[in-house]
Image (tube, rainbow, N blue to C red; front, side, top):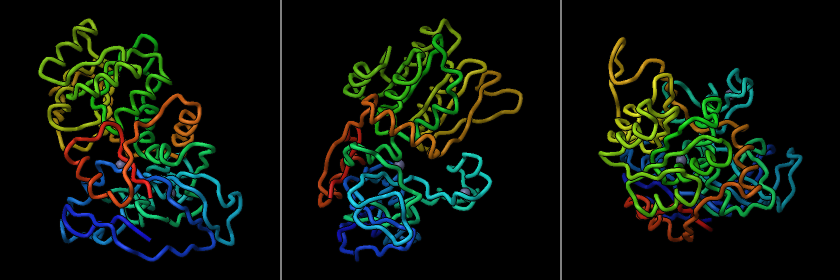
Length: 345
Ligand SMILES: [Zn+2]
Ligand SMILES: [Zn+2]
């Protein structure tokens, strides 16, 4: 079968690999779609001396059940399914507490990232992927091409939003920065599931136009005037919640500049920006809550699938044939994708 493979620093190639064999508790999924994420760009930038060299990428995967292991029940050939982002153990204290995104077995505290398809386990940018049956969720009639990005681009924002859901009351203001793959889903989830006023920011005019037609109450260019505009819009007190789906220095600075006292920030984008935490001083107002959230839980995943099935959120998909994977990586790297690139085998 064909498989998009991390072959060396900043290089992916479509390689021929054997079709995976399945174990008794596994399912062979014929891949219908595999999303291309900024994390994939980051992964292939990890150099030439890396344990992931040679592996098949792809952590946003949906498709159709092609074959069942002998011990698998509850699935039939032809069922549509989405693969879990985090291949959690299901048995540790974190998993049993509903924090399976923090599974202590597959997400060690000093690890690069939790075990995922395409990150330590063979990914889904291929014709087939073998997955343990317990790492699948049904997607009903959803098109796997549309559904695949839900596994991260919608799941991760949903999780971040759920950690601050009680703050997003009808009189609250939410700021969301970045309207790319995750950000354009975050905006739709906020609009569909909260009554808060939403201010969306991006540097790209087309993405701001998308925001205006997808639930933003105000769409602002993410520039040097943005902090002042947001403070003006909130009577000088700032936003209740700020989501940063970019994480570069200017957006981290913006987030800390506009959060209100007692508010919350969720840094989701992995852009490497930072701010000094000064005990007793510094840039943050008193009472601000920050969490370094990763991915999402299976419960978050079910919520995302339900919203998509009800037509309340949908991914702006840019389709690429699997054979054109190198082009998709290049286009994402150069900021040419509006929404999510999805490889279609
Ligand atoms: Zn991702
Ligand atoms: Zn676990």
